[in-house]
Length: 395
Image (tube, rainbow, N blue to C red; front, side, top):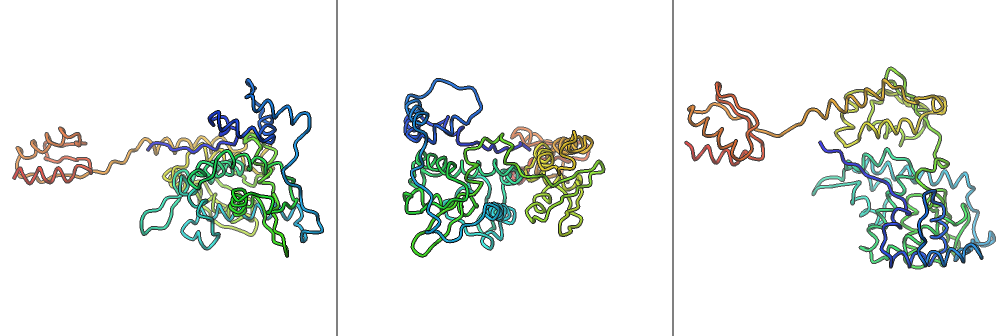
């Protein structure tokens, strides 16, 4: 079965791929210029528009088009700890919705624009059936939070023209959002209609928190918002790990999160769960289920390594070699067997009819196997109707 992979890209990759006219419009914003400077890669000749605005930024600095609201106007703002907890809770609820997509509406109600983002690659549904995770969706769940966020943002931008929104305007605002102060309140009245709609969509994921006062409403950027201009390779925002894998394939996850339990269930067998401990095992059967869903051995190993408990994170390797080797071997073993839908034909009335049928199946490229002594043959399943019609004509 061919392996399908999804790749998380950040804004800088998207910016680099835009045509010149879009780039000129983007470089009107000095925050785009600052975000480009954050890249730790080889520089090239500057775009003239970028060069001009970069000079302004270096001389005068950057000033956001809006200032935070005074404390006297806003109600009690959440602390940074409360804000981080809120963002994590919202993001986990979103991921749980993907895992339990059949009960999606019971968890959160996303906007139609966000539903279209999910349907582009994470969810699929047939008529009269509940939505299900695609191979991309299963792989998405094993990504780091930053990579997951970038995937959603990228798809949100990609579908923006379908909503009548200029991608350059949206990219500019989202990068600008990353320069807002964490935990400060900003007036919703300072936003355009496009920006207000984007803020409402992003609030479902915990990127911002919305609050309403007596007369004014405002949004508060969370850590997810400030990470929008952070490179995917930046490890400073990674959370502490929680998984310990032993040489006997036993797995201990020190977590109270339901999300962690559901993600581990994607590739392991959960044996029992205590209030702050999940105990499971990595088995051949559980891995085969993961491979069937499109998850690869490298993705599973990478997830275990990135989420290794601090007690084992410093040792090398963080996941025992015999475990990683066996995971890869089981994947290789599974990929050696290819399933082909087929039909068995036997009990032919004569040798001539059998040989004629065998020749016909070979001519149309559907013959998989034949036994001339016992007059049996196997043909590809998609050619079954043609074989039936041919055999009827041969009688």
